[in-house]
Image 1 (cartoon, rainbow, N blue to C red):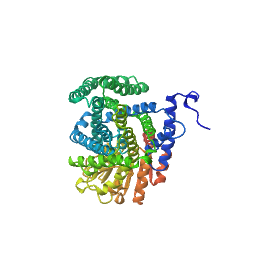
Image 2: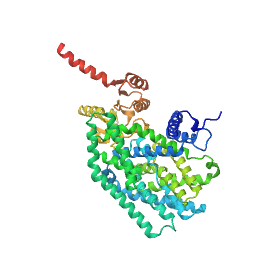
Image 3: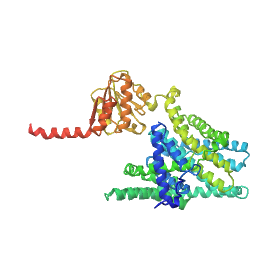
Image 4: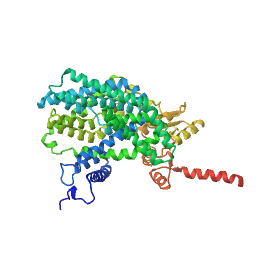
Length: 551
């Protein structure tokens, strides 16, 4: 029996049907992907193909899906702004600005060369190459967040690079209509369009840095004092969406850049961390809808009808751009590990590519085949990007130059008898300082985000990375350690770290932190010798204090 048309579904509207279908099917395919040990992002993309117009069955509303995805981009860029201050952006300007410009130029030239071989007009080739040069905001940030690199030097360079790319695309979107009319519009028209864009962006930046820097944190502070969590959450969303929309309507700035500025201004407030936490669930939900919307654009038949053209497009995106980015970062004196991370981050295309392809086709300067190749390249590069990151995570330590030094700037790990401590946050830092005060040699494993809290002590050694990974534990000399303390609150990561540590050192004594009896039992099954629950220790201490007077 064929499925009912959307118009005949009871109590359904296109909006409700699109959201429900997107989220439910994305969940199913994401769960399957997780079960198969492949990135869940691939499951979300395949969910989009299933509800897209090129496969049988239900077809979701593509325009609505794109608008919902745009909300996800706004919220995601707002979250990045909360963690990325203007000071951080200026700190990487020497690499990000020239690097992004050179990489865009290189990728555009490669795209134009391929377009020439296909017989497309020069302006169409320019738009095609430009679309291949800009990375996806959502994909890049998701990859950095999964590896906790957003606040690292690598992450700041990658995000700064991305912001420069977005700025260039804003100029391109303004210039395309001018270039499409009467032989390119002439030098005068191009100069006027560039000048107007500079004025608009400058005016918006000035308004946010002068007025917004005072008003936004003040407003959020007042709302926080009302004691209403719902109102605070609503205020954060109102700031993110309102500033993004106002930037687009009043100044012609993209939604993404408007939201980024809103987050960057809000980062000046002590409430920035709380604001990030409140918007995280909504950001994740709309990010899923973005990936579904991308999957809906993919026509699988193009892989058969234009296989060589698709592979060439993919090669420009994943090889041409990556090699160029790697060479540029290395040329600026950064180490090989940083260069590999940046090149992997940029080895895909996304949102702005879709916008350029749509606008170029509407203006009649981009052939329909070029648009389809852009979409195919985006889908395939987004699907393959996590695999590229996984390959770098696995093989980068083998190819990293010795001149790079130990990853994270750590000193050589003590040979024997030391204690390995995972996490140096509120709990871990107290453990570290207590052990060091007692004269113990301690090796702390911490991610990039937590390196500001690392102890400065002659007996302390640091290793930057994920303790669940075998190569990170090897750098901490886990095989020679006598004790392994896990002070991070994440049960899943803790279990992985415990299992790997026990495998590499069967005799080591493992102590873990837990928040629930069941979680503690699971950690014990993975190899922990002792699981300490905070609530139990607090209760025991309070009982001891109460019984002091009785004794």
